[in-house]
Image (cartoon, rainbow, N blue to C red):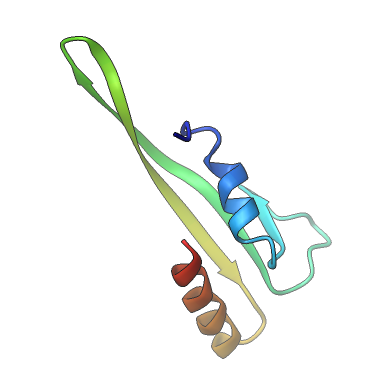
Length: 80
């Protein structure tokens, strides 16, 4: 099981072929690159306490060319 804070490591590992940054890309980042962030975490609870987190992740693909962005987005969808 992966906790909501560790999801970044999973994304980075799965998208290792792409330059991937959490929250903000480096100033000198070369195109194309991917930025990801946690948008929301919802904890599900029962009478015994919390048992599950649902994590909403936003992924932004930054490229110089539209077609390249679409191609990378499709690859990211397949991977994730």
